[in-house]
Length: 228
Ligand code: CTP
Ligand code: CA
Image 1 (cartoon, rainbow, N blue to C red):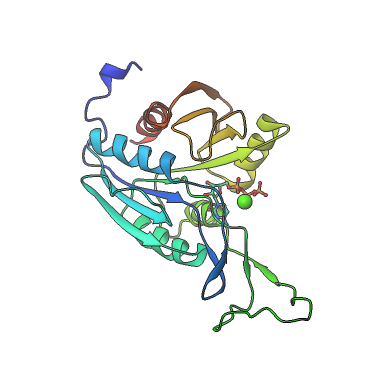
Image 2: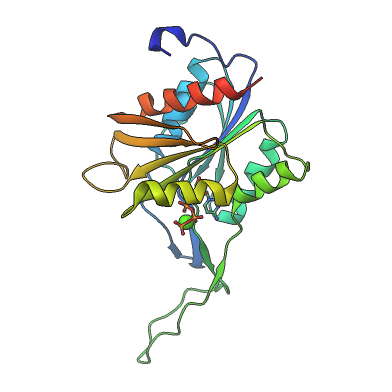
């Protein structure tokens, strides 16, 4: 579909977008984090509002101004993000997981700052975080709430980008997976992005390098087409 034809095609739709990157506390001053800026998630929020959607943006550690007309729910950790997304998803037609969710968290968060001593430091033990995207898809498949009509994920891949993406989409059970190739001045912290959007039924849509808004609009085109 052409740009001019989009109009307010998401009017009356409720969408939930996760953005940014989670932080997993080690002690009161330190965390395990990642390089996600939140720019792609915020671009998704702005474009969805422009197309008439009611938008909840679950924002993990993002240093960006709140987009106008969007309900922003700030979160820190993967467990916080899971709770906020599952709650907002109860009322959502579509969920887009653009956040970089930490796969692991330190098992025992120290209540006091870990001090440096003459001894070698204790290792940090990690536990697996829940996979929020997979959980949303599992619940929908089992007919449990929340069951948004469309569920989309993002994946940054290196190496065999498309094969990794296809396997990931199947493993998660989502409808769309936006696959970014990491590197070459793209993805993290940059205004531009390039991606291949994999569709559950087998198609793929290539989005050439361009502003994150342009990629966001193609994502909404594909989501709008799946909403009945
Ligand atoms: N995701 C999630 N919960 C997690 C990890 C990831 O909901 N605990 C979501 C991300 O928001 C993203 C998608 O799953 O939309 C893919 O994330 P990615 O890290 O690429 O997938 P993983 O299954 O964690 O695989 P990998 O081993 O490649 O990190
Ligand atoms: Ca991961």
